[in-house]
Length: 228
Image (tube, rainbow, N blue to C red; front, side, top):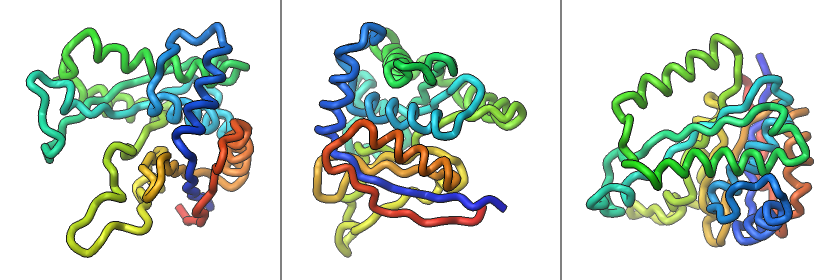
């Protein structure tokens, strides 16, 4: 039985964007200068996770893209069906663990999203299930870590109200089993809540790495242990 720690922390989006974009602007290896807040947050969290876990192989990240606005004609925001597409970002270990590891992660995520500009977002949809399942099986058989992103700040979970008020606190409990990072909006403020699950010594290493960005008002809000 392994003792795992889950922690969720808040970081203001504006402060994160400003600091992380500053890092990119002074780096010659950055191939994408105008990147989204999602790419910045995912890339930095991915970079810190990989270094904290000290995994020896190349790093893979799977994230989902909201396709509703990408269709022609677009689907309304009130559409309740499943309309998401997987995207895969890959970075070699040497690049991610190097001095410009964060920038390498940003480049990989931006490159994965770039394909949406040149073709239909649904191209290859008939193969998505087999590709995702195949990657999962290879990850299990080879013990290679595949990082993934659960939820999105765009879901606005703290605005949800089924008649008895908005939630005070939201946790994505599935990350205990999947090892994914969760991204949620903050209840009353601009920014994101990021949730991760790691062993205690890895969590300490991650917290130290993440704090090096010196985000204003970075706040760790919950920490608890689970027996897995």
